[in-house]
Length: 232
Image (cartoon, rainbow, N blue to C red; front, side):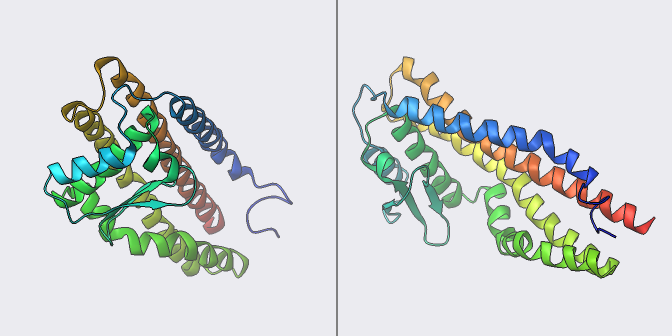
């Protein structure tokens, strides 16, 4: 007997189809939007590095470095090292996309400094979620193959931690994006007609987190359905 479904077909996979489509759309949209506004230079002419450095210094965080990292769309804030890391095109770029992403990642640094509760909670559960996302499937597969409900339940519990991480990530990212628009405005880095362009860049990026959460929830629902079916 096949552990997931009937023959080679697992009917529970249907649950994942909408979220997979959403994830594909989100990835295409964020890349196309980023590339579009990467070619649109901001009128004030600041680089992503200059925006990030000014915002950090203006918020009393001169000790937080702004470093360059490899890859495209690899920009992130590292809470363990307390460092803002920007890709080459963001770090050196003068574009709307560059300064918007730089402000967004700096927004995470400000969240960290201010003890923003959703970020603190996300950082606290990250070790468990990271372990759960990789180890869960070992327990799930062995639990199904060996018909051991306890292993299956443990795997689902571990995967639930990864799902919780994705859910908590949403308010963290949306808050960082709203902060970014305000910071760009207050710092005089954009003019009024550029605000909507920055918002489009950040909204496209946020959609990828929505898709990740939807995929994780759909996968958890699928696992619970399999678990219930196996018990019956």
